[in-house]
Image (spheres, helix red, strand yellow):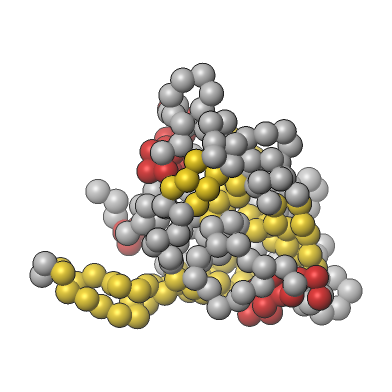
Length: 229
């Protein structure tokens, strides 16, 4: 059984907004999240590409508000940028914090974003929100380029510890010739690790709190409701 305390670590503060009693057990009917998320220094290639999970319920509404409220750099010559990929058509959208383009760009629940800092900048941001337990996520059919590449916002209280857990709980294709894959990008090194569902390697790729991972499903579209505590 997963140790919840060790899974979340000390980076996240969980606040039960309302409590209900069911069968003699006290459970949270609405849990809020607050995370101090470190951002990797920018560098060559994908170094400094911080793929980030955003809680499905959040106070932001658009990427401009996300920039401002989380503490990203929104003024001056060198500012933070945020990239979002539409998994249906593979379109890549990058906006600069503190601009009208960022304010006009919506946040899509369940879809992660990539944050890149200006050269020479490090630090962290504060992300808050809560989960939508009824939201269904759809992974499009994998195609060429970024078509079908869903950068999935892993819930902050997911029950999945490894990529294998995510494959199983989401119903991703894990048998046969054409199987789903999950990729994690290490922002500190720029190294991408891709594993195939239903293989031993998937069990060795750990999910990291606050990070989004890329899902590709060759037998899509596939819809699922993310497993969570």
